[in-house]
Length: 84
Image (cartoon, rainbow, N blue to C red):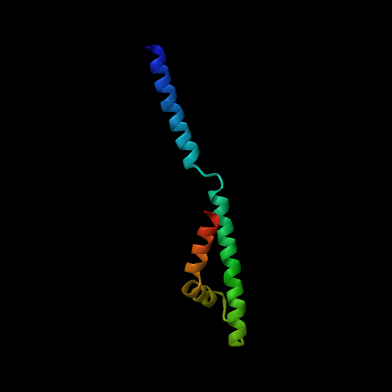
């Protein structure tokens, strides 16, 4: 009977430990920082292209708003697809 109790306790503790390990992704923060940096690069490219079209520097805020309005959704979907 003791073996059954010890086995049950061991399974419960190891299950909790496995859940803890799986829930804390050590690379989540690094992935978020990388995505932020890549998004900034995309905004800078958009700023450059739109500034060339306009003939003057459109500014970072305008470029961010324009990029989010026109490209952000597709870019984020492609990033999710790439990472999965």
